[in-house]
Length: 365
Image (tube, rainbow, N blue to C red; front, side, top):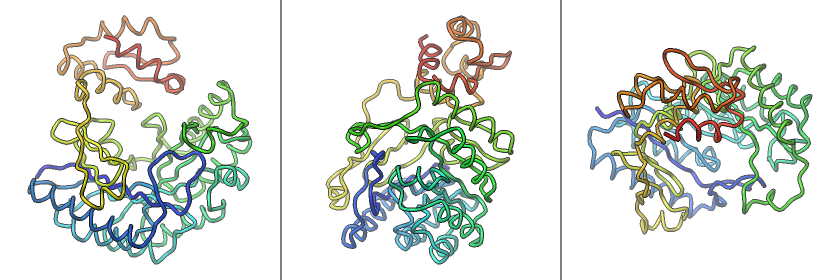
Protein backbone atom coordinates (compact mmCIF):
# COMPACT_ATOMS: atom_id res chain seq x y z
CA UNK A 1 0.00 0.00 0.00
CA UNK A 2 1.11 3.56 -0.73
CA UNK A 3 0.95 5.45 2.60
CA UNK A 4 0.30 9.19 2.18
CA UNK A 5 -1.34 12.00 4.10
CA UNK A 6 -4.75 13.54 3.48
CA UNK A 7 -5.50 17.21 4.23
CA UNK A 8 -9.06 18.50 3.92
CA UNK A 9 -9.60 22.25 4.16
CA UNK A 10 -12.94 23.13 5.73
CA UNK A 11 -13.51 26.78 4.75
CA UNK A 12 -16.23 27.72 7.21
CA UNK A 13 -16.13 30.03 10.24
CA UNK A 14 -18.81 31.71 12.32
CA UNK A 15 -16.71 34.89 12.24
CA UNK A 16 -13.30 35.87 10.97
CA UNK A 17 -10.60 36.81 13.45
CA UNK A 18 -8.93 40.18 12.66
CA UNK A 19 -5.48 38.59 12.21
CA UNK A 20 -6.53 35.68 9.98
CA UNK A 21 -5.84 35.52 6.25
CA UNK A 22 -6.88 31.86 5.77
CA UNK A 23 -9.69 31.27 3.31
CA UNK A 24 -13.06 31.02 5.07
CA UNK A 25 -16.75 31.88 4.57
CA UNK A 26 -19.96 31.76 6.63
CA UNK A 27 -21.46 28.25 7.02
CA UNK A 28 -24.74 28.43 5.11
CA UNK A 29 -26.65 25.14 4.72
CA UNK A 30 -26.59 25.01 0.92
CA UNK A 31 -22.88 25.76 0.83
CA UNK A 32 -21.92 23.22 3.50
CA UNK A 33 -23.94 20.47 1.79
CA UNK A 34 -22.41 21.28 -1.59
CA UNK A 35 -18.96 21.38 -0.02
CA UNK A 36 -19.39 17.92 1.54
CA UNK A 37 -20.48 16.42 -1.79
CA UNK A 38 -17.54 18.06 -3.58
CA UNK A 39 -15.03 16.69 -1.04
CA UNK A 40 -16.45 13.19 -1.42
CA UNK A 41 -16.40 13.53 -5.21
CA UNK A 42 -12.74 14.56 -5.26
CA UNK A 43 -11.76 11.96 -2.69
CA UNK A 44 -13.31 9.21 -4.79
CA UNK A 45 -11.40 10.44 -7.84
CA UNK A 46 -8.12 9.93 -6.03
CA UNK A 47 -8.98 6.55 -4.53
CA UNK A 48 -10.34 5.24 -7.83
CA UNK A 49 -7.36 6.49 -9.83
CA UNK A 50 -4.85 5.21 -7.25
CA UNK A 51 -6.40 2.12 -5.71
CA UNK A 52 -3.36 1.41 -3.53
CA UNK A 53 -3.62 4.73 -1.64
CA UNK A 54 -3.65 4.35 2.13
CA UNK A 55 -4.03 7.45 4.30
CA UNK A 56 -1.91 7.05 7.42
CA UNK A 57 -2.62 10.64 8.49
CA UNK A 58 -5.80 12.65 7.97
CA UNK A 59 -6.08 16.31 8.95
CA UNK A 60 -9.21 18.48 8.86
CA UNK A 61 -8.02 22.10 8.96
CA UNK A 62 -9.73 25.39 8.41
CA UNK A 63 -11.64 27.43 8.99
CA UNK A 64 -13.44 25.75 11.84
CA UNK A 65 -13.83 22.07 10.87
CA UNK A 66 -15.83 21.03 13.93
CA UNK A 67 -18.70 23.16 12.58
CA UNK A 68 -19.21 20.35 10.06
CA UNK A 69 -18.83 17.43 12.43
CA UNK A 70 -21.69 15.44 10.84
CA UNK A 71 -20.30 15.96 7.33
CA UNK A 72 -16.82 15.01 8.52
CA UNK A 73 -18.14 11.77 10.01
CA UNK A 74 -19.70 10.95 6.63
CA UNK A 75 -16.46 11.76 4.79
CA UNK A 76 -14.48 9.52 7.16
CA UNK A 77 -17.03 6.73 6.71
CA UNK A 78 -16.68 6.86 2.92
CA UNK A 79 -12.88 7.07 3.07
CA UNK A 80 -12.71 4.29 5.67
CA UNK A 81 -11.34 1.49 3.48
CA UNK A 82 -8.44 3.74 2.46
CA UNK A 83 -7.52 4.87 5.99
CA UNK A 84 -4.78 2.92 7.76
CA UNK A 85 -5.69 1.07 10.93
CA UNK A 86 -3.26 3.11 13.02
CA UNK A 87 -3.86 6.42 11.21
CA UNK A 88 -3.56 9.73 13.03
CA UNK A 89 -6.85 11.58 12.36
CA UNK A 90 -6.91 15.21 13.49
CA UNK A 91 -9.64 17.82 13.57
CA UNK A 92 -9.15 21.48 14.43
CA UNK A 93 -11.74 22.85 16.85
CA UNK A 94 -12.88 26.14 18.31
CA UNK A 95 -13.67 25.76 22.04
CA UNK A 96 -16.86 27.82 21.89
CA UNK A 97 -18.62 25.40 19.52
CA UNK A 98 -17.22 22.18 20.94
CA UNK A 99 -19.52 19.89 22.87
CA UNK A 100 -19.53 16.31 24.12
CA UNK A 101 -21.88 14.96 21.45
CA UNK A 102 -19.75 16.28 18.58
CA UNK A 103 -16.55 14.89 20.07
CA UNK A 104 -18.08 11.48 20.81
CA UNK A 105 -19.45 11.23 17.26
CA UNK A 106 -16.09 12.15 15.76
CA UNK A 107 -14.34 9.64 18.02
CA UNK A 108 -16.68 6.86 16.79
CA UNK A 109 -15.68 7.62 13.22
CA UNK A 110 -11.97 7.48 13.95
CA UNK A 111 -10.89 10.96 15.04
CA UNK A 112 -8.15 10.42 17.62
CA UNK A 113 -6.53 13.85 17.77
CA UNK A 114 -8.02 17.29 18.39
CA UNK A 115 -6.23 20.60 17.92
CA UNK A 116 -7.87 23.42 19.87
CA UNK A 117 -7.30 27.06 18.95
CA UNK A 118 -6.87 28.29 22.52
CA UNK A 119 -4.45 31.13 21.59
CA UNK A 120 -4.32 32.50 25.14
CA UNK A 121 -5.62 31.90 28.66
CA UNK A 122 -6.10 35.64 29.19
CA UNK A 123 -9.63 36.88 28.48
CA UNK A 124 -8.51 40.38 27.50
CA UNK A 125 -6.04 38.97 24.97
CA UNK A 126 -8.70 36.65 23.56
CA UNK A 127 -11.06 39.59 23.13
CA UNK A 128 -8.32 41.57 21.37
CA UNK A 129 -7.82 38.65 18.99
CA UNK A 130 -11.53 38.55 18.19
CA UNK A 131 -11.94 35.03 19.57
CA UNK A 132 -15.46 33.84 20.39
CA UNK A 133 -14.37 31.84 23.44
CA UNK A 134 -12.97 32.79 26.82
CA UNK A 135 -10.31 31.04 28.87
CA UNK A 136 -12.84 28.92 30.75
CA UNK A 137 -14.36 27.71 27.46
CA UNK A 138 -10.92 26.58 26.31
CA UNK A 139 -10.22 24.65 29.49
CA UNK A 140 -13.66 23.00 29.41
CA UNK A 141 -13.27 21.95 25.75
CA UNK A 142 -9.99 20.16 26.48
CA UNK A 143 -11.58 18.19 29.30
CA UNK A 144 -14.56 17.32 27.08
CA UNK A 145 -12.19 15.83 24.52
CA UNK A 146 -10.45 13.80 27.20
CA UNK A 147 -13.81 12.56 28.50
CA UNK A 148 -14.78 11.55 24.95
CA UNK A 149 -11.76 9.24 24.88
CA UNK A 150 -9.48 11.44 22.74
CA UNK A 151 -6.17 11.53 24.58
CA UNK A 152 -4.05 13.13 21.86
CA UNK A 153 -4.91 16.80 22.35
CA UNK A 154 -3.05 19.79 20.94
CA UNK A 155 -3.36 23.46 21.86
CA UNK A 156 -2.50 26.42 19.62
CA UNK A 157 -1.06 29.46 21.39
CA UNK A 158 -0.15 32.87 20.03
CA UNK A 159 2.89 34.94 20.95
CA UNK A 160 3.17 38.68 20.49
CA UNK A 161 -0.50 39.47 21.04
CA UNK A 162 -1.15 43.22 21.42
CA UNK A 163 -0.43 44.23 25.03
CA UNK A 164 0.83 40.71 25.89
CA UNK A 165 3.45 40.75 28.64
CA UNK A 166 5.93 38.26 30.03
CA UNK A 167 3.60 37.90 33.01
CA UNK A 168 0.46 37.23 30.97
CA UNK A 169 2.33 34.73 28.77
CA UNK A 170 3.66 33.02 31.88
CA UNK A 171 0.10 32.66 33.18
CA UNK A 172 -1.11 31.29 29.84
CA UNK A 173 1.68 28.73 29.65
CA UNK A 174 1.05 27.57 33.21
CA UNK A 175 -2.68 27.25 32.54
CA UNK A 176 -2.23 25.23 29.34
CA UNK A 177 0.51 22.99 30.74
CA UNK A 178 -1.84 22.07 33.58
CA UNK A 179 -4.39 20.72 31.09
CA UNK A 180 -4.34 17.18 29.65
CA UNK A 181 -2.66 18.28 26.41
CA UNK A 182 0.24 16.42 24.83
CA UNK A 183 1.15 18.88 22.06
CA UNK A 184 1.46 22.66 21.89
CA UNK A 185 1.93 24.89 18.85
CA UNK A 186 3.13 28.40 19.68
CA UNK A 187 3.02 30.85 16.78
CA UNK A 188 4.20 34.41 16.56
CA UNK A 189 1.39 36.78 15.60
CA UNK A 190 2.07 37.93 12.06
CA UNK A 191 0.18 40.95 10.73
CA UNK A 192 -0.91 40.00 7.22
CA UNK A 193 -2.07 42.39 4.47
CA UNK A 194 -5.81 42.47 3.80
CA UNK A 195 -6.69 41.70 7.41
CA UNK A 196 -8.35 44.14 9.86
CA UNK A 197 -5.23 44.13 12.05
CA UNK A 198 -3.15 45.37 9.11
CA UNK A 199 -4.86 48.76 9.15
CA UNK A 200 -4.91 49.19 12.93
CA UNK A 201 -2.34 50.86 15.14
CA UNK A 202 -1.50 47.96 17.42
CA UNK A 203 0.77 47.98 20.45
CA UNK A 204 3.09 45.08 19.61
CA UNK A 205 6.41 43.88 21.06
CA UNK A 206 9.59 45.07 19.41
CA UNK A 207 12.16 42.62 18.08
CA UNK A 208 13.68 42.02 21.52
CA UNK A 209 10.22 41.62 23.02
CA UNK A 210 9.31 38.91 20.53
CA UNK A 211 12.58 37.13 21.25
CA UNK A 212 11.95 37.16 25.00
CA UNK A 213 8.42 35.78 24.60
CA UNK A 214 9.61 33.02 22.26
CA UNK A 215 12.57 31.94 24.39
CA UNK A 216 10.41 31.98 27.54
CA UNK A 217 7.98 29.64 25.76
CA UNK A 218 10.72 27.27 24.59
CA UNK A 219 12.32 27.06 28.03
CA UNK A 220 9.12 26.75 30.04
CA UNK A 221 7.69 24.04 27.79
CA UNK A 222 10.96 22.09 27.92
CA UNK A 223 10.91 22.25 31.72
CA UNK A 224 7.44 20.70 31.66
CA UNK A 225 8.08 17.80 29.31
CA UNK A 226 7.22 19.37 25.95
CA UNK A 227 10.15 18.73 23.61
CA UNK A 228 10.59 21.19 20.78
CA UNK A 229 10.72 19.39 17.43
CA UNK A 230 9.99 22.26 15.02
CA UNK A 231 10.23 26.05 15.12
CA UNK A 232 6.74 26.45 16.59
CA UNK A 233 5.85 22.93 17.75
CA UNK A 234 6.39 21.10 21.02
CA UNK A 235 5.27 17.65 22.09
CA UNK A 236 5.41 15.12 24.86
CA UNK A 237 7.02 11.77 24.06
CA UNK A 238 5.51 10.05 20.99
CA UNK A 239 2.99 12.85 20.45
CA UNK A 240 4.64 14.67 17.55
CA UNK A 241 2.09 15.58 14.88
CA UNK A 242 2.63 12.88 12.29
CA UNK A 243 0.69 14.74 9.61
CA UNK A 244 2.66 17.98 9.88
CA UNK A 245 5.90 16.01 9.85
CA UNK A 246 4.98 14.94 6.33
CA UNK A 247 5.16 18.59 5.21
CA UNK A 248 8.59 19.14 6.73
CA UNK A 249 9.97 15.80 5.52
CA UNK A 250 8.80 16.21 1.90
CA UNK A 251 6.48 13.21 2.14
CA UNK A 252 3.42 12.85 -0.09
CA UNK A 253 0.02 14.23 0.88
CA UNK A 254 -3.19 15.08 -0.94
CA UNK A 255 -5.09 18.30 -0.24
CA UNK A 256 -8.82 18.64 -0.92
CA UNK A 257 -10.93 21.78 -0.61
CA UNK A 258 -10.55 25.42 -1.67
CA UNK A 259 -7.09 26.76 -0.74
CA UNK A 260 -5.71 23.25 -0.05
CA UNK A 261 -2.22 22.29 -1.20
CA UNK A 262 -0.84 18.88 -2.21
CA UNK A 263 2.52 17.26 -2.76
CA UNK A 264 1.90 14.18 -4.83
CA UNK A 265 3.82 12.35 -7.53
CA UNK A 266 6.81 14.64 -7.03
CA UNK A 267 4.85 17.81 -7.82
CA UNK A 268 3.11 20.47 -5.75
CA UNK A 269 -0.48 21.52 -6.43
CA UNK A 270 -2.99 23.97 -5.02
CA UNK A 271 -6.74 24.49 -5.22
CA UNK A 272 -8.05 27.99 -5.96
CA UNK A 273 -9.57 29.90 -3.01
CA UNK A 274 -13.11 29.77 -4.37
CA UNK A 275 -15.79 27.65 -2.67
CA UNK A 276 -18.38 28.10 -5.41
CA UNK A 277 -16.01 26.91 -8.13
CA UNK A 278 -14.92 24.00 -5.96
CA UNK A 279 -18.52 22.90 -5.43
CA UNK A 280 -19.38 23.26 -9.13
CA UNK A 281 -16.31 21.27 -10.12
CA UNK A 282 -15.07 24.17 -12.21
CA UNK A 283 -11.52 24.00 -10.87
CA UNK A 284 -8.97 21.24 -10.71
CA UNK A 285 -5.71 21.04 -8.81
CA UNK A 286 -3.29 23.48 -10.39
CA UNK A 287 0.39 22.58 -10.56
CA UNK A 288 2.68 25.07 -8.87
CA UNK A 289 5.43 26.09 -11.27
CA UNK A 290 8.55 25.70 -9.21
CA UNK A 291 11.73 24.24 -10.62
CA UNK A 292 13.01 23.65 -7.10
CA UNK A 293 10.34 21.13 -6.05
CA UNK A 294 12.27 18.32 -4.43
CA UNK A 295 15.53 20.21 -4.87
CA UNK A 296 18.21 20.98 -2.31
CA UNK A 297 16.93 24.45 -1.32
CA UNK A 298 13.46 23.18 -0.51
CA UNK A 299 14.70 20.04 1.25
CA UNK A 300 17.22 21.94 3.37
CA UNK A 301 14.78 24.73 4.23
CA UNK A 302 12.18 22.24 5.48
CA UNK A 303 14.73 20.14 7.37
CA UNK A 304 16.16 23.19 9.13
CA UNK A 305 12.70 24.00 10.50
CA UNK A 306 13.03 20.81 12.54
CA UNK A 307 15.21 20.55 15.63
CA UNK A 308 16.76 17.42 14.09
CA UNK A 309 18.11 19.60 11.26
CA UNK A 310 20.18 18.40 8.32
CA UNK A 311 22.27 15.26 8.50
CA UNK A 312 25.41 15.45 6.43
CA UNK A 313 25.20 11.90 5.11
CA UNK A 314 21.79 12.44 3.51
CA UNK A 315 22.78 15.85 2.11
CA UNK A 316 25.77 14.27 0.39
CA UNK A 317 23.90 11.21 -0.87
CA UNK A 318 20.94 13.20 -2.23
CA UNK A 319 22.62 16.39 -3.45
CA UNK A 320 26.39 15.86 -3.38
CA UNK A 321 26.90 18.56 -0.73
CA UNK A 322 29.48 17.64 1.89
CA UNK A 323 30.08 18.64 5.48
CA UNK A 324 32.89 21.03 4.63
CA UNK A 325 30.56 23.11 2.44
CA UNK A 326 28.13 23.58 5.31
CA UNK A 327 30.93 24.38 7.74
CA UNK A 328 32.13 27.20 5.50
CA UNK A 329 28.65 28.72 5.59
CA UNK A 330 28.54 28.37 9.37
CA UNK A 331 31.37 30.88 9.65
CA UNK A 332 28.86 33.54 8.54
CA UNK A 333 26.44 32.72 11.37
CA UNK A 334 26.75 33.59 15.08
CA UNK A 335 27.73 30.47 17.02
CA UNK A 336 24.74 30.64 19.37
CA UNK A 337 22.36 30.15 16.44
CA UNK A 338 23.32 26.63 15.40
CA UNK A 339 24.80 23.36 16.59
CA UNK A 340 27.13 21.42 14.31
CA UNK A 341 28.69 18.05 15.04
CA UNK A 342 29.98 15.07 13.08
CA UNK A 343 26.43 14.07 12.09
CA UNK A 344 24.87 17.31 10.92
CA UNK A 345 23.70 20.82 11.63
CA UNK A 346 20.61 22.13 13.39
CA UNK A 347 19.36 25.47 14.61
CA UNK A 348 19.06 26.54 18.24
CA UNK A 349 16.04 28.48 19.56
CA UNK A 350 18.06 31.66 18.99
CA UNK A 351 18.59 30.55 15.40
CA UNK A 352 14.90 29.83 14.95
CA UNK A 353 14.16 33.45 15.89
CA UNK A 354 15.89 34.56 12.68
CA UNK A 355 15.37 31.31 10.77
CA UNK A 356 14.72 32.93 7.38
CA UNK A 357 18.10 34.66 7.45
CA UNK A 358 20.05 31.69 8.82
CA UNK A 359 18.42 29.20 6.46
CA UNK A 360 19.09 31.56 3.55
CA UNK A 361 22.81 31.56 4.38
CA UNK A 362 23.02 27.78 4.80
CA UNK A 363 21.16 27.02 1.58
CA UNK A 364 23.03 29.54 -0.60
CA UNK A 365 25.26 26.84 -2.04
